[in-house]
Length: 88
Image (cartoon, rainbow, N blue to C red; front, side, top):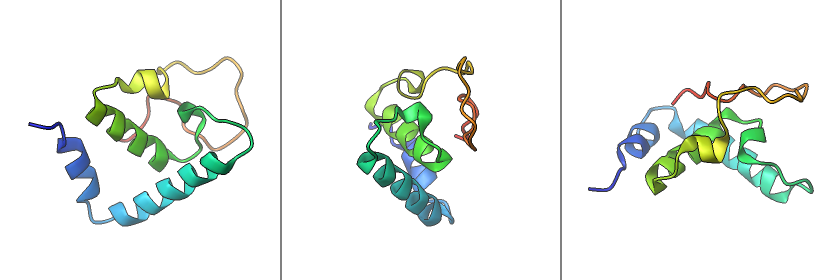
């Protein structure tokens, strides 16, 4: 009865090991960074996907954790993807 369908689908894919490694690297980098980033400011799409899946499992809306689909007023110049465009 647990809401694990999204987790099972994500973790059972053939290339999930590489995606999980990228997500782990990004989350570790953010954890030890001197500036505290919000989840929506993470540069790694894989890290955002893992956070989104865990928020789904916990019953928390992704928009509360990762932000809405609107683009922030102050744009940083980086390779991040706008919110609302996550692959899962």
